[in-house]
Image 1 (cartoon, rainbow, N blue to C red):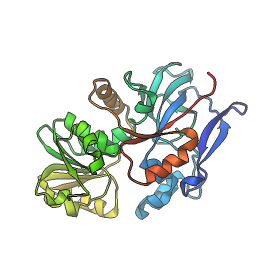
Image 2 (image 1 turned 90 degrees about the vertical axis):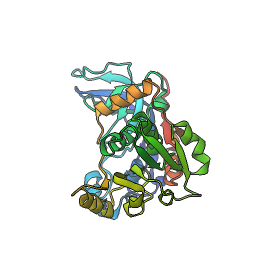
Image 3 (image 1 turned 30 degrees about the horizontal axis):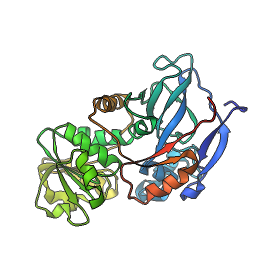
Image 4 (image 1 turned 30 degrees about the vertical axis):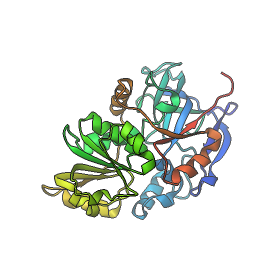
Length: 335
């Protein structure tokens, strides 16, 4: 670390409410031989960031192993943030994939640290050239959330042309991408959202809309090849009768009940419950980049906050009513 050059970052020193996040001056990192120094222009706040910051949001069964990984008493990494878009400011002498001045987007996973002006990452991570047809703010919304949607729709759901797919939480961060990806793979898509987001979800390609404030999608009599609960507001027991004979139920939160159902339904033919992590992968990021540049995938941004107001962004995300994504913009004084 270089002690005489500083940068701004949002510092996370203890588990608790958003008020614990503080804007501070910290040492600007210096890239090692296999790293690139990224000047961050945009990041995001997601439910995953909230779960890391406030461990009460993690299901009780998983709280201890999560704490063991992230820091038992206090956080090991004082800077949150998984997504980023920015410029390569400098590269180590072993770096070959990138050069100074390139615009890139990607994720810090499996670590984090993007709620800052700069970060150093190895070149073998999930980093790629920023799509030419997107701003930094737009590009920053894709690496984690769109990758999650891709993993559930393409890999776990194996969505195929002609299938009937329902997306619960179709106006959320994962849901907005899941609707578009399910349509891209040829499915007929039903989106579940509130009345205020009906037109938005239609514009993303949904063929039918169910307003959850007026109708329970499990009571319509319609059956689906895949039900993807992108907001973890349903259950397999409730959705089972709405699945076709070999239908798949996907959910994003791994509760004890979900894990038991996944194990039980995996033993034979019939309806299945599936859940799984969506690890950051360069090949997936490149798939997303190709879809973005082809006009097949776009983002929805609800609100944008400057780095200094990151705590307020966390509070907004934790209300659970955001539409699409919440972006953090990172300003830089001077060159």
